[in-house]
Structures are given as C-alpha cells and as structure tokens.
Amino acid sequence: MFIDLLSKAEKHFKSGKPFVLYRKPMEQTVKAIFQANDMLHYVNDYTENGFVFAPFNDENKTILLQVDEALEADFDLTIATKTIALSENILKDEQKEFHIALVKKALKSIGQQQFKKVVISRCLEVNFDDSAFDLYTNLLRIYSNAFCYLFYHPKVGLWLGATPELLLTTENKQLKTMSLAGTQKYTGNEHPVWGTKELEEQELVTKYIAAALADEVSELKISETTSVRAGDLWHLRTSVSGRLRNNTLKNVVAALHPTPAVCGMPKNASKAFILKNENYNRAYYTGFLGELNFKTEVFRDSNKRNKENQAYKAIKNTTSLYVNLRCMKIENLKASIYVGGGITAASNPEKEWEETKAKSETMLKVFNKYS
Image (tube, rainbow, N blue to C red; front, top):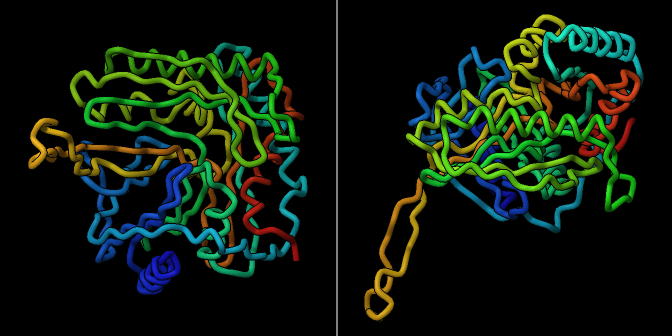
C-alpha cells in the first residue's frame, strides 16, 4: 500500500539514508528506490544503472542513487489534500525591483547580440508547519500530469517537485525528447491564443534541440507544436524523436542539458550570464532527474502457431529523465521555491515578473493556505 511506502521512506529519512519516491505523468503507480547507506555516488559515463539527480551547472557532478531496494505501490486516490499553513504570504513583491532590473540587463545583452535567449529565475523562501511527506502527498493528488518526486540524500538535501518537462526517454536505441517553452496562465480557456514572443521562443528552442541532436541521432522527426496544460499554466510543446547513432547517451545528455528552456541560447553565453547575474545558486533547480538504464523484461510471441510455447523473453533498456522544474528544496521547516522565465527580444520586464508569480502559485498549491 502507498501508506506503507511512505512510512518506509520516512524511516529512511530519519535514519539519514538516501531514497527517492516518484510517479511518472498520467500514471497511478508510485515507485521507490532505497539506498542502503549514505555513500555519495556519481554518474561517470551514463552506462550506470540507478536514479540520477543532476545540477543545473553541467560542470558539476551528477548524483547517482543506487538501487539497493526497489518497491512500488499505487497512489491511494481517496487521500485528500492536507492543508499546510505558510507563515507568510510568499507572493509579496520584495524581489520585484531586482528581478525587473535583471530582465532589463538581459534584454540589453540580447540587443548587443551576446545571446538570443536567456532564462532568468529567482528563489523564494518561506517557513511552513508540517512535513515534506505531506507536501509530496499533496503534489501527487494535485498534479497527475507531471513527474512528481521526493528525493533525499543526507549529503545533498531534500527536494520535491512536479515537473511537466521531459528531458529525454530512450528505449534501447529509440530516443524521444521535447521542446517546452512559452507560458500563459490558465483561466478556463481551452484554446489559448499565443503571442509573438511565446511562438518565437518555442521555435528557437525547437530549432536548437534539432541542431544539437543532428550528429547524435538519425531519422529525426519533429511534431506539430501543441498547447499543453500543467496545473494552472499553459505551455507550448513540440515532440522530437529519432534513433541513437552509437547508443551514446552521454553525448546526447551533454548536447541537450541545460536546454534553452531553462538556460538559453547559445548555451555557453546564456549560462555564463545566469551564473554571473542571478545572485543565488540554482543547485539542482533546472537540472534533471530520473531513471538511468533500467532493465525491463518484455515477453513476445515467438511462434503464433505453437500454442505450447507462445512467448520468449527479451530485455528492454530504458532511460527516463525529466527537467527539474516546479520544484522546491526543504531544509528543516523552510521551503525554497524556484521560478523563472525565458527572456527574448520581445520580452516585457513587467510581464516577466508576473509570469514568475504565476509559476510560483503552481508550487504554492501544495500548501493550500497562509496562517
């Protein structure tokens, strides 16, 4: 049962041992991975097996949670969201002046052709009065169409989130990824109308991903752009797929991360601007996380005429990685919530500020109220 899975994770947390709970989009099953000790393991060449937790800055190491024990249980849909009180109203405008000034600085750099796009983010801190496990249960209840996770390592920290963005999935040599950009608030509108800024931003991201993958995959296919809803926000999404040329996952990850949707383009120039000017450390926000090289048994029909021996077993190697958006870090009873937005030449500083406020409400929903 889900409650038993949650209880085991709480015991692991209290004993200082690493674990992760996660549920993939549109699924009911919550999976859990438990590491038996507090050793810190890293990804070296992406041939490893385990759950990965990567930082935004790709020059830093990617954490690998070893699969010492793996369990799963269906989420109990009868569990209601729990009201968790915040100690203050996090939507106040204390950061507004700095953020708008930073957006204007980014626009100036774009005008000087230092880069075409950069993603500017900020961190909001708030105190609350309950456990991260209750927050995670609320996440699962509210965001069925997102990758919902709760990750803990005593040497890394406690993180949770509900991200709508896929970095990549692979099944043997088949690769799928997406470009996700453009944001507007859901107001009951089932057919959102997109402006020039959002459409151009989406096109930039899609072209960048296609170019980045050109040397790594064959049979590249790009879908039509569609509107997708994530909680109270609309996004533009374009699916991209292909076949790995040399099965070199490490090269594909290096080509995609950090994506233009969380960093900018060109990558190096926009990343340098972020690291110099954001005035805080993103850590694992806008990094990525998920399953690396999980083996799955697949039973196939070997001979339809042979009724006594109809199936044979094959092993499928799969990887599912998600961009760490809509997330927060929990330390004691303090939540650090991360929000951001893409800046292009068509950006309006005031609207960019309002967009970050709308995005912060996505994570604030798991608290439900102010005290």
